[in-house]
Length: 177
Ligand code: HEC
Image 1 (tube, rainbow, N blue to C red):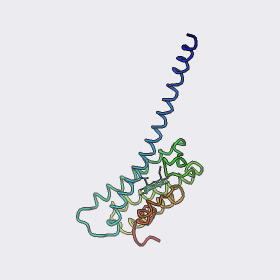
Image 2 (image 1 turned 90 degrees about the vertical axis):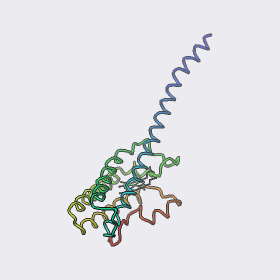
Image 3 (image 1 turned 180 degrees about the vertical axis):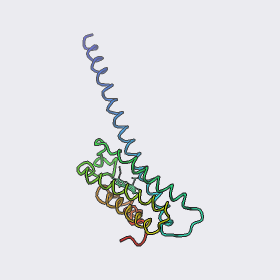
Image 4 (image 1 turned 30 degrees about the vertical axis):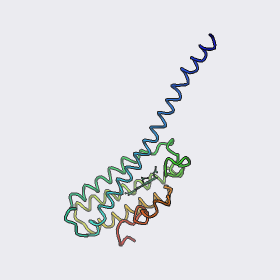
């Protein structure tokens, strides 16, 4: 009888403990998913904006949409900035392509975030002002910030290489230095 009570006691303590751990883990995985989708969202907007910045004619994509995309880029950068909790340092287990360097070099990581945000702010403003040269410069700088961060902090999968050459890692328009 005593043994049964002991057993019940142990189980009643351990089960909630484990499920707490499991909850925490699924929260972490969700955070990783959200940051990946937000990054994809950034890429979609960059891709839409590039031809506009390069002055390629497209009747369906106008200044309003370009401004909106630039604002969304800024918002998404801001949104993802806090999505790097230490417990999401899980590249060893294959859950994320963010390398452990993110947590080893937080200052450099944050600096690249600030660079990207600054370029996105310039992009938004120069589109608003119809300043063609500044818009191109801002797009180049944005590409540099995204690309440098990926080169330093993101593990590149072979399956993503084709896409990567296509621009994820930095050169978003022609004529960037
Ligand atoms: C300060 C660093 C940093 C900046 C700035 C940054 N990224 Fe990322 N990005 C990462 C990291 C790290 C990952 C890997 C995330 C993961 O796997 O958890 C990533 C992943 C991605 C992915 C792949 C997402 C997936 O589905 O796995 C894309 C696409 C992407 N970024 C696009 C962009 C674009 C476009 C910009 C700029 C407008 C940008 N990123 C800015 C660090 C950054």
